[in-house]
Image (cartoon, rainbow, N blue to C red; front, top):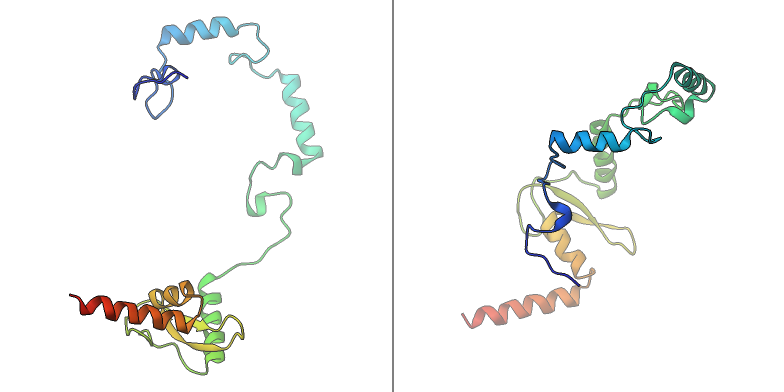
Length: 163
């Protein structure tokens, strides 16, 4: 297996991020070689071919929709207007209803202010409290195991005694 020095890989010569940088002379040579080739870059569609393509598009527009979104897509069936903020507020109200109390501004475990999440028991689905992302992640990493969390707390207490 051949190894190359960094930046000297033969197939990367002349290439710097934005694509190939070919001289006009090289481009001209490539055009000459491509003449007569059925994939030539200089070939244009004939009027007859353009007409046939247009007719095919009119017959089966779904085949030629090419990423058009919304009403421009021939498969459009009306749709609805989606308001993400409204749905987020509705979801929060549902969670507050399940919790039986409003979402506080701070975490119930560590007291930090910021993004507060609805915490629940994954086995029973029962609400436990409103906690921050850090506390939620810690509980999740411990797989909701209180013995493991207590062992972690003991470990930290022991390691802090030596300082």
